[in-house]
Amino acid sequence: MLDQLRQRIAAEFIGTFALVFSGTGAIVINQATGGAVTHVGVALTFGLVVLAMIYALGDVSGAHLNPAVTLGFVVARRFPAADAPAYVASQCAGAFAASGLLRVLFPENQLLGTTLPTGPAMQSFVLEIVLTAMLMFVILGVSTGAKEKGITAGIAVGAVIALEALFAGPISGASMNPARSLAPAVVSGHLEHLWVYLAAPALGALLAVVACRCVRAEDCCCARPA
Image (tube, rainbow, N blue to C red; front, side):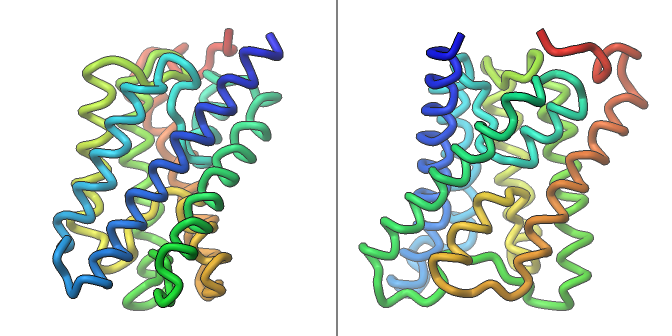
């Protein structure tokens, strides 16, 4: 059982590293090349890397790759709360490893893909709540227990992330992921408005569980995790 948990934690580390390195790396490279990647390219990068990691790791750890998603699964009673701290720690460690490597590769970049509001902080706060709620609602709908796996899950989750990054990215950054925002903010030293990207995804995930219980069977988000 302990070996299985170690494998799942390692999978979350690798998956979150890939997410942050690819996604924020696309932002950094876009800035370094004067816009060669483009906003659309950045949005697609986030969606595609999550899709790929779900296919690669979904059967191992569930490919949460996001503390807010893990929290959502815990509250939905699809994931054991005792395992959540290890998952979150692994996700954050993977994110910090990715941001640290990007700092080494692009020492001249000031933000390293840090998410910052382009308008009022409260505007981005509300946006991030709604975006994460939409994402978590889809995840709860296509996942099996606490595992995002299969063709449907990969395409659906990756598509939602790309979609939300496309239309909301220019305003809030469309983080939806505390680990994805925490690591580049700390490594780059830009901690302003970090509270937005830590609190809003958690609230959005909780809201999604409530919504799921409204539209699905009574035991959908109430059964104890196996």
